[in-house]
Image (cartoon, rainbow, N blue to C red):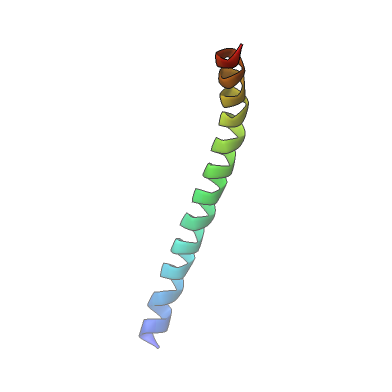
Amino acid sequence: MIAMLSAGPLLLVVHLMGTAMIGVSVVGVAWLSPRLRAARNSAAA
C-alpha cells in the first residue's frame, strides 16, 4: 500500500515532465521551422 501511494505522485511527475517536454518540442519546432526555411531559401538564392 505504501509503495502504491509513493508510486502515484512519481508517475504523475513523470507524466507531467513528458507532457511538458512534448509541448516544448512542438513549440520549438513551430518556432524554428519558418526560420530554417528562410535560412534555406536565402542560402539557395
